[in-house]
Amino acid sequence: MDLTNLESLKYFYPEIILSGTVLLLVILDLVIQNKRVLAPFAALGCLLSLGATLQLYGTSEGWLFHRMVVLDNFSLFFKVVSLLAVLLVIWMSVGCHEIRQIYQGEYYTVLLASTLGMFFMASSTNLLMAYLSLELVSLTSYILTGSLHHNRRSSEAALKYLIYGGVASGSMIYGMSWIFGMTGSLDYAVIREVLHQGEANRLTLFMAFLFILSGFGYKAVFVPFHMWSPDVYEGAPTPITAFLSVGSNAAGVAIMIRFFFPAVSHLGEGGNWDFIPGVEWPHFLLMVSMVTMTLGNLCALGQQNVKRLLAYSGIAHAGYILMGLVVLNNIGLRAMLFYIVVYLIMNLGAFLVVIIVSNATGREDIEAYRGLAWRGAAVPATCMAIFLFSLAGLPPLAGFVGKFFLFAAVIKGEFYFLAVVAIINSVISLYYYALIVKTMFLDFPEPTDQEVAMTPTVFPLLLILAIPTVFFGIYWGPLFHYTNQSLGFFIK
Image 1 (cartoon, rainbow, N blue to C red):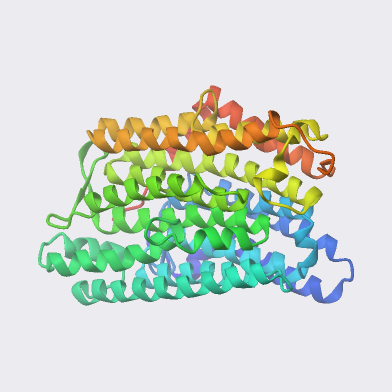
Image 2 (cartoon, rainbow, N blue to C red):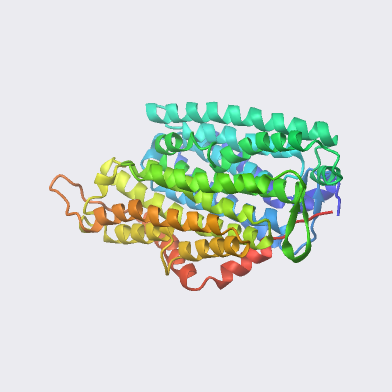
């Protein structure tokens, strides 16, 4: 199915609804005085878009808008992930004191515009469209990071993000220009056909892949493109930090999978993918995966700021997720999709507890969590322990199941050394996660430590995130079935 612009609109409802919500928020911001109603309107638009996205599952697959984007289960999966992430972040924002200092109309408008960019990152089948979608997400992320106008730390984080992003973007489009020069096309299907004819220079092609990977890796926080992450995570408003850690990173993984698999690899028998002979990009990603998870965990060990600690933790988890690409089969890709959903739940939960503590104390350091369980916050402390132990990969939590699928895919692919490195890194990560849990439960509070109370809007969200973290660790069948269904590329 290859549809024209007008024909494509009937499969474009999720994006149309989200775009309409963005425009509506701009108008409402101008005409109403009570800015608190903007969050419900933003959430309603996301819910309608989510409903439209779910309805597209099982419909016809094919190219839209003259092969600029594609409709398939893979793109729909990441649209659902992006919408779930933004819905949860909107809910978090309502109860966050930092967000009350921000212009509400601008905040929710830019947040939804960034989500729209993530839609296109997952569905782009053209290098130009991939670049434009990534830039839309990047530019809106810079704005959101620096949205605390009178906070020097937020402005500094936005500036660093902008500088790193500009360099990565320039490198990426330079690599894309090489691909265009070698193949004469920006279309993924044409690029795949030309490259597999074996006429392109292998060294030139590998260098082009490296340049493109710098853009994708910057968005998905792989080493050595990770340097912006700790400063940005620490300086940005906490809901935005949470949004970047799950939504933006997932979109980065999506655009990379879409490029390195349907665009430059062939699907063979048994769900195995064949890469271009002579261009050993999977072996390069193997090294990147090991270095990413190791550096992330080692740097997290000495952190005192919890947001910064979770930033390095996120780098380590990006390394775990990257293992699914290395094995070059659908088993690895399926494990990646499963882990992305699990990571979204447990990481957003951890950041929600950071917001609860920050609201009460104004602090983000580990000492602020001293005796948290005995300061009127037994429920947040217990939930935080669940989230952190799940991030560490302890059973019977969802993080353990996610890591099990990733490690099993690597072992089945006979990458034994990678599996050993990943297991060692999981053990290392347990130290800094357990340190926070120990501080919350075993360290007694001092008289100067404030009581920590939850707002009525935060408590149900905390349970919504904590319960699936436990549930999917015990009964993961429905989620596995959903991710298995979602691993479908439209390739012609």
